[in-house]
Length: 380
Image (cartoon, rainbow, N blue to C red; front, side, top):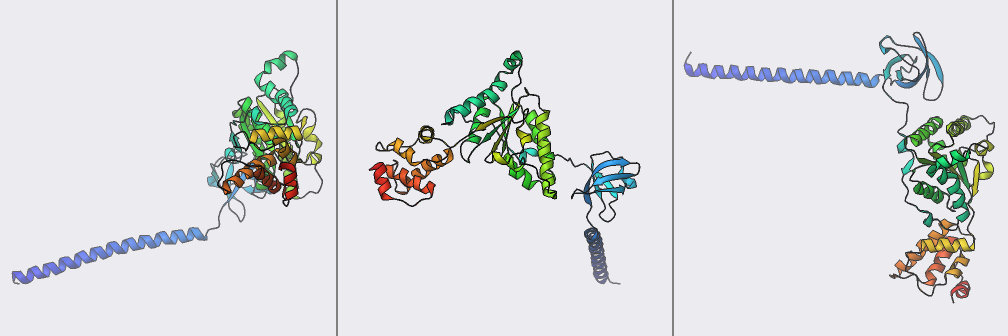
């Protein structure tokens, strides 16, 4: 065979061999891809495993609790290994056989569900509540600052207090001020959210909140809307009410577990003292009840001066007359009046608050129609 033809033949054979190898490699990759897709498809067809809690062990059987709270006696799979009460496991959904143990903690990351801060509110920021401030200083501040004084005298201070009164009267402000004055960690919990968001887990969260308070002591646990979880118990027996009761009982257990001179104090706040269960305010629990009322005229004047101290007020403003207009306002309402008056000035591109701005702000906060004769009477 001539050399030229032989070279052409060799080239064709080489090209064919190379193409064959490439096709075989592509075929191998495609087969692997198909097998992986089949495996993934099979996994999609498998029913999901259920996360359960082990309550008790009896040889090769166990009592588990499924997420809805029901408990079952089930078999333990051979590959599961040794189990302990309280551990979390995966169980097959059809017959609940335990498949394997999983390293999941039962604890919440509790710091995601509460407000934790070091408040910078001073007693000077609290207006018109001198009697309430004095009581809180005696019951909460003094035991945290001078515990040795109580030991020498031989008395135990209250473990906690209950602040009650109309909305916006300064209950949260008082709690933050005492936390600031004692350099305590302020842990704020809203009772209604605890009950609504975590049905079935409320008692567990209460326990972990107080564990956190002990770790961050000195600390103050402030439970706002405590009536949501500490209302008078009734025997209706629905699952939601039973869970609320369990959460409430855990709260009482935590309060009872504190020594009086522990560096943790509990402050509850409510607008509905009348519906509270007597168990939470009995002696030894939140037994110091402090009423935070709507401010009277002198108190309103003090609160107004606190909120308006940095405002550029016109000299024509008669502050006493403005305060008289705010009869029945809470501290929060008075702060809103100052804010709204500032907005009225801003809308007219002014930097000074005029008497009419304050009058309009009072009317807006009170949700009433303007009356020019009232304005003339008060400011004319």
